[in-house]
Image 1 (cartoon, one colour):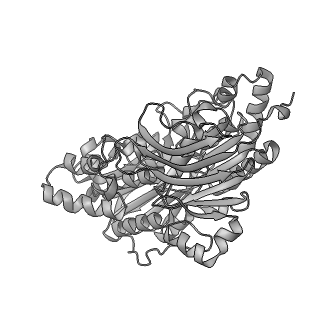
Image 2 (spheres, rainbow, N blue to C red):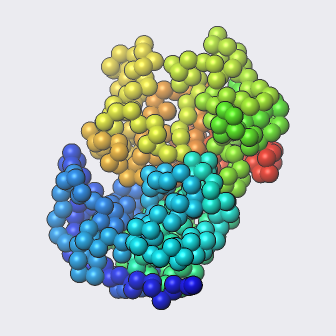
Image 3 (cartoon, helix red, strand yellow):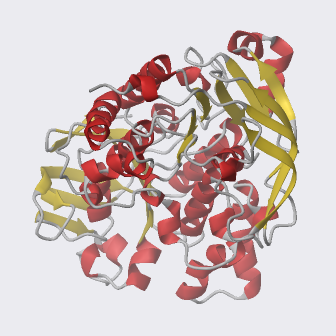
Length: 498
């Protein structure tokens, strides 16, 4: 039996001088927000990396301040009540889907929220099937959630929220780790759900063009607090003076591309090769890719591209020495191994980090300390051989370039999604590896931080380093002159050469 008539009414939002400061931070994550959103409005929330977009979404979802770890000023309400008093009215999809997946099977995960709302059982499973269809996640209901790729987990997290049929849908970079077809699929799915339910939408994305035709309002947060711009998409994104202010703030404006490097070296000596390589996500699991032949050269970049769930991250982790090969071989050249042996998977961790550095898809998975500065210094200190002056010369410029200097005393887990990503890249750059392996390196970046990150990685290539990136960001691979290794249907093939 359909339950369309039980869909909650759309939620209104009011923020009056609202600010939030995380405990241990000197400055607020978001400040002086004056905002009113009518029931059923669809809002695209923009702003520079670190301007407080995610914090505002968390405030609207009622998940700030449960443990007293923060300070609030002003008011933030849903339908005139504090968000914490009306949980269930808002559904939040986080930047990191791993952080909100709680159950072992796909069907149970999607049903979980609706079950907590005491929705009748027959209606729950109708909602589950419809939500999975909406987001295009075609896997059995008993599939293990841990066996999904990052992009599939992102779809799963969205499906779980859609099945709750909230009156306010809060989406934090919901398409960031999806392949291009998946981006459009999920965007269209959200549009269909909004048409069906009439819910209010607030979506955070850096790439404006994806959502411009779905929303009816664009709100831009200023980096120093307050609202930088607010109005219909056509007005905000086409007015010349407004476009200039948004571009300066790092907002991705349709038709405006940040400057990128133009001179890159020709590939140098071979550093790492695979032949007949088969890879698997688990030691005894099935192979997800077979027969991979690829070479990583000094002074070059390789992008691994293809649809979600195809094995891109598994391949990258295997080449990086973090997963054992399932078949075939991965062999390091003498120039890379430097006496450590030809198999990266057999190297000790200290040997690995100075030769092949890896940036995981989820930044939190590699944080080891309670301060940003300690994260940046951890690798170089472990390698040894550098005095304090040399350490400062290595670490400080990277922090400055990636706009982390003002955050050195902050807890890494309190950073925004884009800041966490830049920190995870910076920690590996600080160890100066021969090969840098990155999984979705541009996730959560505004146009300015994207350009700075690309420039830093171009310098690594120019200095003879090798870059391997799992990415859906075509502008990123083009800017770095990357060869492309396309993964699909259990195979991988180099399809483009610079």
